Length: 120
Image (cartoon, rainbow, N blue to C red):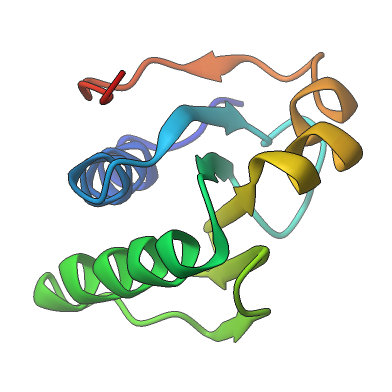
């Protein structure tokens, strides 16, 4: 079973918020075959801890505008996780993204195409 269109649309909205705050390497992974709790992981890179905080704030703001509130927020700075139940947003500094390699850990999960333009 693939991720629902509703959760994909939520991931798209979150990805747009990440892009707005100049996050990079934005990917969405369809986790439906791997997990029972979340359908999509959105993973993004921040250049530093202050940017990670700003990205998390923007995702929170944008999703709140459409009535979505996270069931929990974990971390601050180098790795922030926003849990919206079916969507989990991971914002990491480049150092932590390289260390934990969530992309490679879940490389057998299909990627969801996102329509965002990233700053280069």
